[in-house]
Every structure is written in C-alpha cells, then in structure tokens.
Image (cartoon, rainbow, N blue to C red; front, side, top):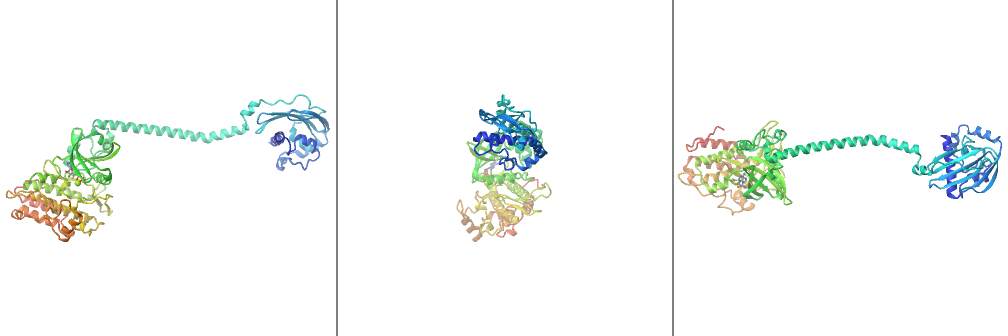
Amino acid sequence: MAAARGVSYLLFVLTVSLCTGKQNYPTISHLKEEGIDNDSEEPNEPPDQLIGDFGNFESKRLRTDSKKRFKCLSCEPPDCSGLTECHDALQCWKSRVRDSDGVERVSRGCTTVPDHVPFICGSSSKSGHTKRHTGGQYAMDCCEGDYCNNGSFPYLANANFVEKVPHDVSNIGYIVKLALAILGPVLALGAIGTIVLFLMRRTHRKRLMAARAMADHDPFYASDEVLRATAAGDSTLREFLDRSMSSGSGSGLPLLIQRTLAKQISLAECIGKGRYGEVWRGVWHGENVAVKIFFSRDEASWNRETEIYSTVLLRHENILGYIGSDMTSRNSCTQLWLVTHYHPLGSLYDHLNRTTLTHHQMMKICLSAINGLVHLHTEIFGTQGKPAIAHRDIKSKNILVKLNGSCVIADFGLAVTHVQSTGKMDVGSNPRVGTKRYMSPEVLDESINLDCFESYKRVDIYAFGLVLWEVCRRTVSNGIAEDYKPPFYDLVPSDPSFEDMKKVVCVDQQRPIVPNRWASNATLSGMGKLIKECWHQNPNVRLSALRIKKTLVKLASSDVHVNLDLDS
Ligand code: ADP
Ligand code: MG
C-alpha cells in the first residue's frame, strides 16, 4: 500500500514533468541536477502521512547513506537524447513512461538522495517494476553498478490495454460489483413488478372483453361475475324487465352493461321534449325503452337523476323503472343517456289531454301516484335502507301513465334526499329550479326553510294537489267533465314568469277553481276537500303523502264505481 502510494507519487512527478516541459516542477533530472543533498526542503516531497506510511523508511535511509556510490548514464526524455553521466549515485535507473494519450518517453538517470530511493525504485532496488496509473503507465529498471542503466529500456505492456482501461482496473471492478449489487435487486424487482402488472392487466382486459362480447349478444347471458354484481340476479332480459315493470324502479342494470347501453339501443322516435333534453323511444334487444338524452350542458341533471335512480330500494311499481345510464360520444359530442321503461301512453298531462276518466280510472291514477309519492317520501331504516326523497318537480308531465292505467313518477333531476339518523340532506348541485306553474307560495315568496327536509316534502304536496285538480276536472260525473286545463290557466299566461306566479299564488292567494259540479258527487266533493288541504297557503297544515293516500283509499272504498284492490 505504502509502496503503491510512493509509486503513484513518482508517476505523478514523471508525468507532470513530461507534460509540462518540466518548468515548474522538479523532475528526476532536476533531483539529479539540483536537489541531491536538499532532501528536507524538497517541494515535491511526499506528504508527511505518506512518509509515515513507509514503516521503516528512516532505517532504510540510514542504510543507503552508508552504501557504495556509482556512476550512471543520464539522458532526457522524450527520446533520451544528449547522453551524460551522473555520479555519486545510490542507484542507476532507466525508465519508460507512457502517458494517457499513449505517447512514450524514455530516460536514464540516477538516485543520489537516500530518501528518493524508495520512491524511485521501490523496495526492490535491483529488479524492474511496472505500474499502471490513471494518468498513464510506466516501467522502471533500477540497478546498482557503474553504468548499469545502459542497454534497452524496460518493456511496457501493450498501450491498447491501457487505452481500453483508462481507470484503475481494480477500482472499476469494485464499482461494477457495487453497481451490480445495488442495481441488480432493483432491476429484478422492477422486472417482476412489470410482469405481474402486465399479467393482471391482460387478465382484466380479457374478462372485460368477454363480458362485453356477451353483453353485446344478450346482456343477461353475461358471465356469472357480471350477474352476481347486480340486483337483477340470474335472469333473462324479459324476466328482468317484467320484474322491473311490476316492482318499479331500483338500481338498474349492472354498471358494465350500462356502459354498453348506448351502443345496443337504436333510437326510433322522439316522444318528448323537455327543457333539459329530449326523450326518445328506443329499441333494445327487441324491447321498447325510453331514452332521455340530456343536453351536455345539463350534466348536473343527468348526474342527479342517475344518482337518485341508483338509490337502494327505490324500485317501486309507481316509480319509473330505471334500466341504466350511459355517457357516450357521438360525432365527437358527449351524449348523456338515461334509459328507463317505456310507457306508450306518455305523461299524465298527455293522457288527460287525450281522454276523460271514469271514477275507477281517476282513482287508479290518484292512488298509484300517491303510492309512488309515499314511497319516495318515506325513509326505510336499516343498513340497506332508503333515504327519504323529495321530488321538487311534481307535475302532470312528470307522471307517466302505464298501459294498465296506473301511474309512475318520473324525472328525478331535482330530487333531494334525507337520512334521519345522520341528519344528512343531499340537495345535489343542480342549478335547475322546479316548474313555476307548480311552485308553492313559500317557494315563490322565498320564505321556505331550505335547510329543513320537511319543507321540500310540503312543496311536493302542494304540487300534487294541483295534479289531483287536473285529474278530477277530467273525471266524468253525471256525464260531464271539464276540458283539460293546466293549473292557473285562467290567471297566468302560457309560460308564466316567477313574478306572475308569485302575484297569483302569494299576493292574491288564488288557487284553481273547484267546479260546482263536483259538489254533487260524493267522491269528487271529497276530492275537492282533499285537494284544498294539499295546496294550503300554510305549508305546515298541508297533509302528508301518507294521509292523502289514506283519504283516497277511503274515498275509493266508498265509491261503488271504483273497483280496486285497496289492501296494498
Ligand atoms: P324533462 O327532464 O326534460 O322534463 P322528462 O323525464 O320529464 O324530461 O320527460 C319529458 C317528457 O317525455 C315527459 O313529459 C313524457 O311526455 C316523455 N317521457 C319521458 N319518459 C318517458 C317514458 N319512460 N315513457 C314515455 N314517455 C316518456
Ligand atoms: Mg320533466
């Protein structure tokens, strides 16, 4: 180790002297010419610690001091031209140095200062030695004897080797080993991770493709996996639709199938145009479905309605049956679809415009509609419970008539939910407001307490009172029925403003007129009374949905013309 440092030092001296033209640094020749007995002040003397490394350096010097002196040949690098002699040498030497650029220089000289002997010739004074160094390579032959440093210069290993390995090989080996030790495990772990990820993705993709392929063929012929994730269970499309028809709405199709809905449905005809988009009749696997296509600017309504329809336990025979939602891109335009059961008779508004009603038909409509509203307003407790929901846009256009003459409540874009145990009310983030014609006095004069869920239910009841009025006008008694008219038809213009409605409903406290002919019929007069309790100016005294239902059941049971199964 110490010898190696000495050699490094020597090589440094040699290299610097050769590269710099030996102007500033003493070289071996300088040592020979100038510093023979200037040993202690030597500027390039190895540092203290280096000397300290040479264990018996002092004793060696004492030994060399008393040694025999020789005459040696001396010549200058690079080509050893101008041969001279040097005297009083402790050792003669000849050297060959190859710098890092591969340029070789040869020289001869002698060592006269005992302290320099270990640096120049190492511990073995007679034998030659070679050394590679980061800056180059050298070979040095030292000898004792007059002119013993004549003859050929020492051999130096192939320069190519040095060029190829410019750094200390042992260091490089160490660095490589170290790098391998650190990088090896990291790379191995990375490779294993990549393979695992790749395999997982491939499996996932395969499953997805399989499920989609099956869904394309028949959504309910899908893999077990898909079906198990659904409320639909193992059923065919027809069974699913039938069950949905009878049991009403719920959480809809499995999400995976919902995502492919738009691709599978062909739109047949536009059946409704609302403020928030269009409703189309579509055909899905041979079945008619209703497709509500929202304007992309009304994403909040689509979101809200999808959210509400996905509510656990919402499915009910008097809530529009939900099939699924899909967000698709057509002609680079985002389309938001909400797919529900299709009801060819359309809305109650359409139905009342088309036809008059018997008492039986009127009661069926009113009872089924209030059944839907009771289900909506009622919270079902338990872990798999259902929140209470207020609709906030009850009107005859948002109630659909089924072929059997009963109704379902539709259009949940504005709904609010409430969970009693947590007190949490979710009003959604829809900027949409209810229909002005059906707005209650407290909404119009903005006295409504928006933080109280009960307020929203009372708003629904007010609007439901107006719907009952629309229905009863079309109910024949004594062979007579009124024309279809929307509420306040005689008091406000066709598209009333907020102010128009406020003046009529809040300031003048007007309500639709209850026709005189109703008084002559027990059921209709009972209905008139009920309706007035629904649209009362004071929200707190309005009836609850459940109370309305009970009153209707009572009226229906005492009407001989009504033949309904009233037990449910
Ligand atoms: P909007 O949010 O634009 O008011 P709705 O859901 O109320 O949309 O639907 C608008 C109209 O489209 C309804 O009044 C009704 O005439 C028709 N419609 C909606 N859904 C159906 C359906 N499932 N079956 C038949 N007609 C429907
Ligand atoms: Mg609507």
